[in-house]
Structures are given as structure tokens and as C-alpha cells.
Length: 586
Image (cartoon, rainbow, N blue to C red; front, top):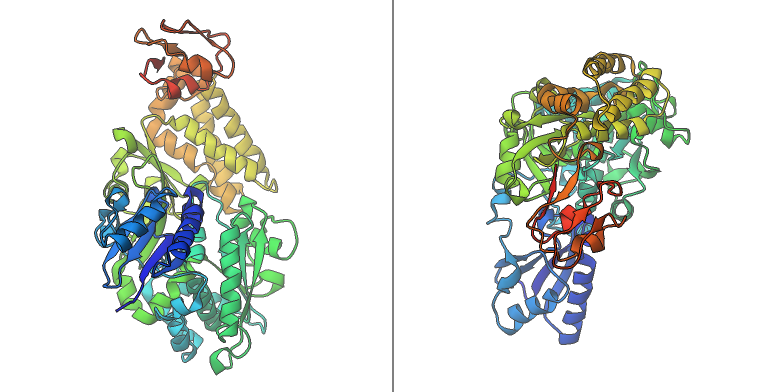
């Protein structure tokens, strides 16, 4: 039995942003000042981002308590309750992992250690069979490992879903004495945070997967390409790499096996296009990150002209589990064509947002409404965007769609790296399409005419429509431009850039029609098409006039206010601050 109370503080980026650092410091202070018998640990994201900041407290007897939505003063109260009164602190007590229906449909493979271990302590990873898979793999020939990965039906989790074992076999069969292995951690999709969370919560799982992959293909040098905007992930990667080297899991003659492999970290500057394999390699080489035509493919001629294999974080972090548990057990988790689980960043207008790991084949409805608990504020579901800027928007009629590669593609979306942004009745789908196309247009490297110019022309059409200047023929122009951009762009950025436009046209053409034919935005989003008006039930509290940045609201205290439409910039502040909902959009 443990002698001390153990407290684990969720100390990933999501927790820190919500105040975990202050909670941790306050706990340290209380423990030291009162000489409490408590051991304090930082862990990664457990997935319940909607309840951050979070702590998990385990009594010496093994009973666990989870507390969420904490404020700094709660730290002392929790300690006082458990130590002074031998009881839980009910005010901030929430269901733990074993009791919360948020987790009931999830299955943790990639996130098996996140939120449980201290990511900066290799001993905690070893205590949960860390690097045991590496020991097993080093006793096998690389071809045996590749066959295991093929049998597991693990597919690349970075977007296209190419079979991982097949990809590894290409690199293994390439004739060269020098081969490279790259982990693509350049996570650039808006709303996506899967790779960051894996690295912050369990960096050794990634490293172990990389060493196994390198042994399988015959590489002796690896790179992790991670964006510089992830400082905590980079810090924990650096610590983990040094720890792995010191324990003989990286470097020369790993575990006396005769196999040598080391890893360097390359920091990206945030260019979305560098998530594409050939652009990423150019960036590592010190050149401008721009895509190259294929063939030759990276497995034949990649980094520094040598055979190279590239996988993303989630793919590689799955490998140790497969080696330890077998291909059949992993394959049985997913579908006939895709084994295992998929991690999603569930975000947007959903009640319980966070990091979700589910078996491939789980329906959108189960993820959004069972795990995510539906739309916040009891509003109506409208759409879900999957696959980031390269993905598509699916409506309510598609909620029974299983999240697997083929079915999502048929519906007009893609699995992508795992971003899942939920939208409600207050979202304008034309504006959403414009937002994502603006993103890809800005992030285009400019090498391809069809991507550089074509996305610009599509964006201009969307801007006209959302400003009330659209014409019926604009929809046909969008449909004609899209396939040309898809067909003639060099890399995946341009080839998939029209997806948000095409899916919103496919499922929400009526919204486009109302923008064009009626000059109105049904969701009340497009500024040029809406007017804010104060209703008769205004109580004259003056809150709106005080908050208006352009002094467009007139009225005396206690009397109904009026908006000067010539001054109004349609910012929506008055709607947000009105305490009695007396502001409407017309």
C-alpha cells in the first residue's frame, strides 16, 4: 500500500492555458508549509480538456478522486478535505476515468499512458512496459516486423491512410547504405492538437516506435520535424531523447543488438505546406519548404537524396502496442480495412471538447453526441468539419457515417490527421468555406499556378457571395474551378483545397442561394448582409452603449436604446453583452 497521497496535475498545454501552473505551484506551497504526506506529479493531457485544469488524487488505500475546473484556492481546500477531514472536496469533484461516460466508448492505444505517467520521467514509462517492445523487435529480422505491421492493418494516421507496413517495405527494399526515418509532427490544421498532446503526454512511446521502425527499414538516423509553436512538446522531446540515450535505447549498438540509430529534432517555422512530405524534407535540408514532383518517391530518393520513410506521431506511437499485443488484437479493434484506433481533437460548439481516442469505424454521432455530449447551449447541430482545411463539412444527415477512410471520402470529407470541429445553427457554411479556403490560399507556397491562382479566384467568389454581391453563375464557376485545382496542383495542399467549398455546396447549397438570391445570411454571420436592432424589451441598462467601440448606440438610462446603422460595424458586441437578450440580428 502507498504511504502518501499521490496527486497528478494535468500539465499539458491545455491544462497550463487553463491555469494548471498556478494550481501546481499552490499545491507545492501548501504541501511544503503544512508538511502534508503528498507526492506531486505533472502528467500529460488525460483528454478532458473541457474540465481543465484537472488533478487526480489517489489515497494510500488506492481510492481515486478527480477534480476539475479548478481555481487556485481550490488547491488548499482539496488538501484540507482529504488530509484534515479524510473526505473528498465535493465542490469540484467530477467523474474520474472509470466513471465518466466521456470515456466509455473510447479505447486507449496511442494515449495509453497520457495523463497517467510523468512524461519527463523515463522510469514511469518503463514501469508500464516501456521499451519492452523494442527489446522484442530487436530480436527479430526487419522483414518480420514489417509483416507484423502489415498484418495489423495499421494505416498512416497523417491523412491519406496509406498502409504503414507497405510503406516501410518500400524503404527497406530500397538499395542504399544510408536511409532516414522522419516523424512528421508538423501539425498545422486549425483546431488540431493530437500530435502535440501525444508528445507532451508520452514522448517515449513515439521514440520507441521510431527505433522499431528504423530497425525494420534499416535506417540509422532519424528526425522529428516539430513546429516551433509547440515549446512544451519540444522540451519534453529533448528530455526524452537524452533519457533514452542514457539508457541505451538510442545511439550506438542499442541494447547490445548491433543496431545503431539516433534522433535529431528539426524545428519548423509554422508553414502549413511543410506538412507535405517533400516540402518537409526540403525544410530539414535547410532549403525553402516547397513540394517536389513525384516520382521519385521518398522511399527511393528522399532526404539528402537517400531512401526515406515518413510517418506521423500517432502512427509511430501505435507501433510498440502492436509489437507487444500482436497484429490480430490490434486488427480486431478497427474495421476490415483499417486496424486500431484513431485520435481526434474534438473541438468547436460541442459540450465536452477534448482529446478522444476511438476504434476506427465509430460513428460521428457517437463521438459528437455520446462522448462529446452534443452541442453546447442546447442549440441545433449543423455540421462537422473533418480533416482540417483539406477536409469537408458533413451535415446532420451524415451523422451515422463511421469514421473510416473510405466512408468519409465517399461522403466528401477525409480522415486527415484528426481534427474534428463541430458547428451549430449560428455558423454560416459559406463563411466556413471562405475561412478554410482563405487559410489554404495564404499557406500555398505559390509554386503551382492552379493552386496559387485558382484558390485565389475561388476565394474572391466566396468573398463576393458573403458580401451580397454574388451571382447565380458563381456557383457554377466554383464547381468548374475545383476539379482543375485538384487535378493540376503538385501537392496535397492544392489537391484538397477545394474540399470545404465542394462539401458545403453539396450539403448546404440552400445557404449559398439565400446569400445570392435574397441577400441574407440565415446564420447572421456575414456582416454586409445583417443588421443589428434593439427590441422593445430593452431595459435601458446602457451596457451595450458602453461596450460599443464606435459609439453607434444612443439612448438614455432606463429607456430603449437605438443603433445608428450608419456608424454600426456589425461587430456583434451589443448582442454578446446584452443581459436581457434585447438585441436581435435581422
